[in-house]
Amino acid sequence: MKLVLGSASPRRLELLAQIGIVPDDIRPADIDETPAPRELPRPYCARMALEKVTAVPRGADEIVLCADTTVALGRRILGKPADAAEAAQFLIALGGRRHSVITAVAVRCGERLWQREVVTAVKLSRLSDIELNSYLESGEWRGKAGGYGIQGLAGALVPWISGSFTGVVGLPLAETAHLLQAAGYRRRA
Image (cartoon, rainbow, N blue to C red; front, top):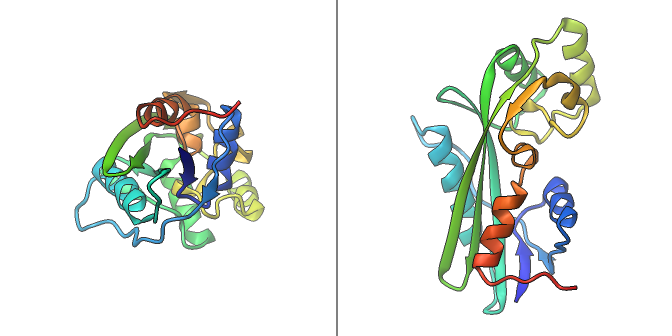
């Protein structure tokens, strides 16, 4: 079976490489990621992963892997900020508080589907104006749910996490490996 990664995320590709998996193809899903009115973060994230995995075209001999990562502050979904001002709003709101990072993973082979959501609790430090402006100037917030990437500069701003570090980065590796195995994917030596 061939593996198709339904994501353009370089972080997901790097994470898969850490466990010796190199996708045969990369086909990012093109879907509307707008949350439904009053949609809660975990169901939203699961829905996004499911919509992505069903949107990716696949052959009979292909397994498709998709994921979605969402930052939740209570019932509020903090997606990818549109600009630096929104990134600043997110980082200020998250500062000094615990929040959840949800990554939903979906694997599809033929008509069979495997899904899993992984929730990790994260605490971001309260940022000084200098820290906030420095982080915003780095541009690292671009394309990151909640406006930060724990695997980069923001790692120094996260004093505590409980759960899956790789889930916060964008692909919980233990759970992903299990789903791929259930779908019949075997790593090539």
